[in-house]
Length: 183
Image 1 (cartoon, rainbow, N blue to C red):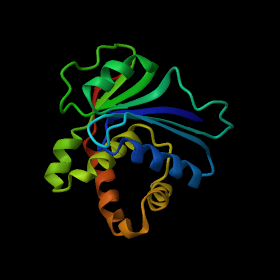
Image 2: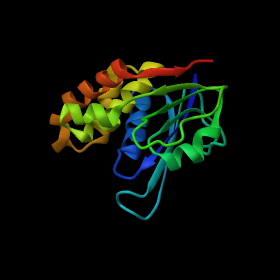
Image 3: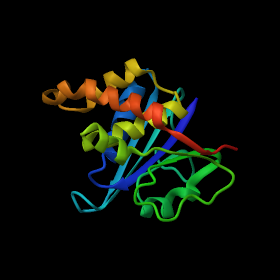
Image 4: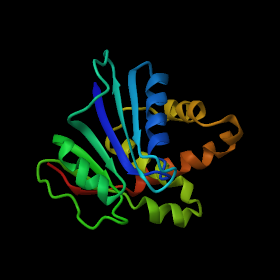
């Protein structure tokens, strides 16, 4: 098993931390991982993306020209990364703020209304964990036990009291993800 993932959106949406949690969760599951962030100079509002590879075998390079899964959280990222998804791959996106929806007919497409669901939860910081739940539902490559360990490893100890809320958000994302197109 090898899963090549790109997560892209605006800084402040939890793009890099979602990638870091996937990477740590993979490590907890005794897998090989790479985590390679890319972001603009802005702290919030600039573009950010991260490539994560989780594999049962050695990984030769962290650089991707194509990916198995793209998690897209803004229009600029949709424009840039939609074509990177391998035929038969998966594109997950939050339609909030997306003006041009995916056009490809050779990939699986899902939506998750994470912005709306996190507002309903009363915690907009849960946004990225709702999206992460949608990913885990469609690609169950990590166990929830290892995801919790990955969260513990990637967030400061002073925030560990938020782990149950993160688990709740992940479960909500698993429940609310919607298929748009299956190939």
